[in-house]
Image 1 (spheres, rainbow, N blue to C red):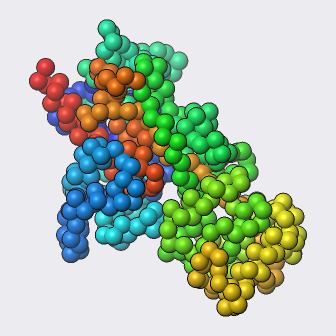
Image 2: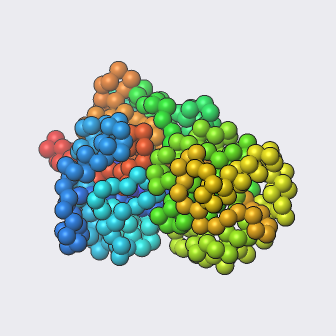
Image 3: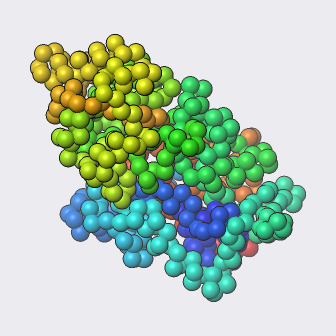
Length: 478
């Protein structure tokens, strides 16, 4: 068997196949395993786990699936979503058995996406890297036993076929091309969001200027190779942005690495003291909304898919949590205040009118937005967007703004597969010998037109394990 990609899906597929007697070529174009897990929050979800029971949390896969359908507006792939959700609690327990380093707040509720009714989300103390650390010992054991051959710094160049059956992959390593053959090929190569031309093929036209927020290796290699064989690819036209990403001054249309800095949007983690305005200087949403979907959909309706987060010295003095954060919580309010003096990510000015000029927004509109915020906060008028939190009045000392642009970090579309994870051609027939799992399927399969907590890495791991076991068993029977 050949598995291409060593993110959560590829690692789990290869390990499960080796556990059940298969010999696996595991191909990775980078110099280390893990894929997007190196940057991901690594949040996974599952109902009926032992950890839920230990905390007295009553839950079931059926309840979890009902919530997935609710949050996704019932636009998930019904069979594949069910196949994954029904086994995700088992995935959580499996990671527990491996000694996964759970954060002490697990299971918990995550407010970066629409919130579940029941705490069923988990994450590691090192976020996505905690998943790598849990799986790596299993991989090393199989490599030592000769069941898995790991090919690092090895790029897949094409799929190999014999009489319309996929029989392996052509790869390149250190300038040498090699053919790796197997009774099945599993594409677990992840998404395409770092490939601007390919990403924009699937995005709505008005979203073509959103930032790239993922790592550079996510170029859609598996999707491209499969499409060359006639594979069908979804084109749902769905896009919901990741918010809070900061444009990288040194890389046009790319975001600053999420591990370094992002703007905290969720009021559950930071009370908003600021206002958000668009290119016209107008507010467009309640900054304290507890609905991530509401603010995400509001942002992509704005010109250029960007917003300016506007605040002043009074906010710097009053806010107890830094506006800029990262997963390691290295941004203290003191560090943020220092950054306001010299960071290229932050625009500063002595007056609001000067700030408007620097941001290239109409000064009168920006002034009207600030005056509106202050008037609502003083109880003089209702807020047109329904904001209810007004901790400080704006207008004290220097003015600041952080410009943040909608970002793509997760591929929404992908290869079409059947419930056996066999890749389908444009006529709806399986391509013999070719399978796919993980983000290469597109997140719409498991999240519909929204983001659903844990419904990216968990289906990747859960269905990766399922596929590895199934293929190993079927190959053994042949």
